[in-house]
Image (cartoon, rainbow, N blue to C red):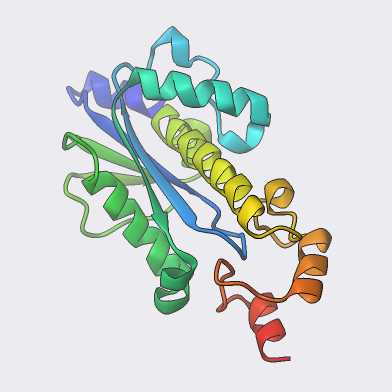
Length: 200
């Protein structure tokens, strides 16, 4: 665990940051940051990359992580901002916002995959970080559960697209809904499949 090496070096306040919804063509990009009170806590032993967990397990761990966090934040980047700024820039900006929204400034920040300029503390980009750093794994679960819940809410407001099932990703049922009902303001208009429908 990367956190053990940092703690051994005297760094005790470590933030992990990760996102959910990067590949979806509808709904927000969600970024979470978390500082765990004790990354080695037995209560966190089942924390993994959110993609490796069932929805039920993620929901349970979501509450455990919040209880075990010294501080955490979850922020949304809207489809409109993604269209205006671009996905990659929006993702990096979201990670900066999530860190700056924490109630305390961490001594060190671990990010999943990308180096991020403008962080308020030293940071390290970790390749496949959500698989090797528990702080990033915890952030990935917070972001994923929050976003899935948000997409279920949007499914009630925008029925017919199947948002509660596919969570805004490009699936056959989603495209069937788009072809039948059209593009909405919760879709990312800059994405190729959505732009093609707008321009058709």
